[in-house]
Image 1 (tube, rainbow, N blue to C red):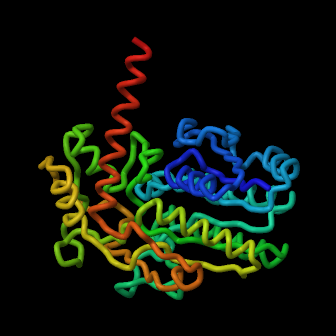
Image 2: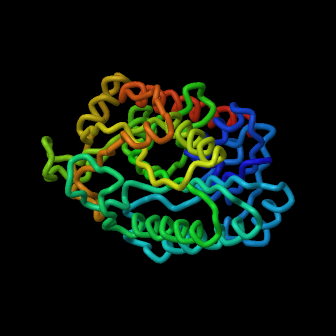
Length: 335
């Protein structure tokens, strides 16, 4: 039976598809390609271009293919954009997720893995955030994701399904084999943006806020390699299939780096001293987000193998080279 992956043509979703295929799974991807790319879906994997809120389409796929496993990545993810366009984020992340869950569960899905975020914690009261920390999101992105978590928990109680919510901290890096990576032209994630600057695709980068209550005044984040994250999803799926109950788990390494520290690592690994502009804080950015990461290791038996900032940066930089070659090949083909 196939696994249904929404947003499987996007950054994290495409890495999950690679992991599933490597494990011998059959996969069906649903993606509207608003931020994803058809070429990011591996050859031989079925790609259905469509909206996850299309109830008839979702129900048909689940029913015709006897799908019982859903991994839901499709979402809007940029915090400042959510502040500027809250209703758009509630539509994309909450209303459409509600439609997806209703159609999929109604058609026979029994296990759901939901892509959530550390943004549900808001401004944490502690240095390291455990899953027991009460959610208190401070931006529409975090609120929209928390609402979806609540919907999933209530639907599970009513319909007898099981789920795993994975709350990501800062996802970065790219597939070590160079098959996928973060490809959006409008990316805002620090390591991606800094890698673009090192590759000459940007004139430089901005650091938003240097007056936070942190050792160097810049925000601190816990960076997790996207391939390790995909493997956590695989472990979660295996646990649900084996009869494991519903869980909410943080996905991070339990260690944070400041913005300044990350920028220096990108400069050192790339050998490029790109310009850095210091700018005021952005709305909705908490000072520090570091995962309490013990529970995910215990519950899923997850052992990350790419837990190293330089490795994450090296893979991100290598992916920029892959994208540059893709662009050059496309230009040559159209000439």
